[in-house]
Length: 322
Image (cartoon, rainbow, N blue to C red):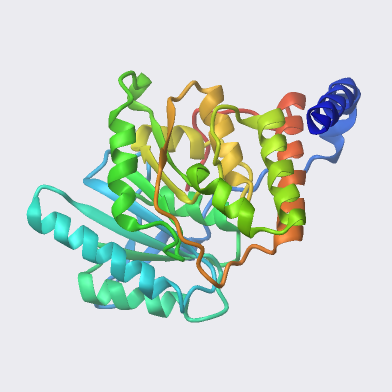
């Protein structure tokens, strides 16, 4: 096929260029974003308005599950997602009192009332179950997920989008995926929700240009970073606490392509990763601008690979997280 020939030619060109690029690339590489928190980001407000400190991911877990919800200008969509999630979690706890959980809503420097909306759930359910982490400035989705994850108390950590595109009850699917992994080195494993089974339908509904962008992105993911995972971008991923600490400690990318780097890091550390189908519905109000966001992600994918190849970025078992 013609597209296979084109891909092979691109691969040959890039393979030839990489040795030359690696010589000069570190000069043009900016420092990775800091995982150090602003003083205001070290605390959350309890239901009574009292300020309390977040724990550290390096601490032992004290709950079964933490749910991290990155949110940027989500005052309208967040309540729908939170209502569904809290209904499920409360029902599950009622049926099994030993099941304990928390939801951490991370307001990624929103300009609307996202924090105020999220705080209503803290007041309703208490700060032991719902906490709000308000970032001083916008970091991007990856930065918000990382800051939330570093604040978790759970044995398992789920990242879930604020738009509620994935049916929350499908957490059981990713839990089963995690349980299906027999060998978990140092108790590390990741289960990724996937929309790959919906691809044929989505292609039929997309324009030719958007379909081209999608396949181009998939190729770049496969060529530069991650193989064996069909859908790297689904915002519904479950980590063991140990896997979260290992991967998020080395994460550099803070915007849309962070999922790819996260899985790249996991594969470098030989952390088992499984992919399981989840129910997904496109929700209006996406912050993703098709052309420019895909262009930015494509650029980030190339930079991820090159920065690791040149040694500008390194995998680290531990980085400063406070």
